[in-house]
Length: 75
Image 1 (cartoon, rainbow, N blue to C red):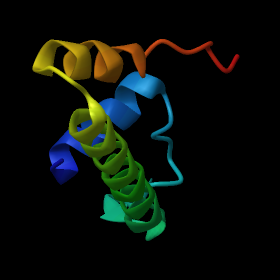
Image 2: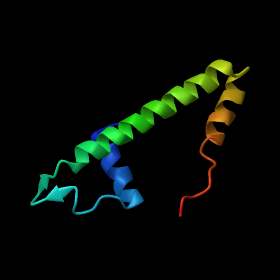
Image 3: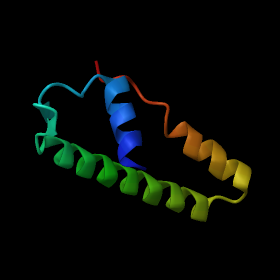
Image 4: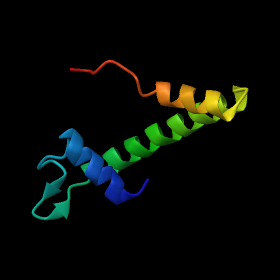
């Protein structure tokens, strides 16, 4: 995941605010947000790898990985 991907997704989620940029410069908060996003991505990759390793077929693995995205919204 690139820095641009993280920025795009953060904007889509509505979490980028003026806290991230002060006077056109990175405020330091973005580094923490970027690190958090990368930790989440790494955990998700590992979870998907475990699913793929334990699946009997690639179709079973694909369905199980896709099912991971079915969750309740955190409103």
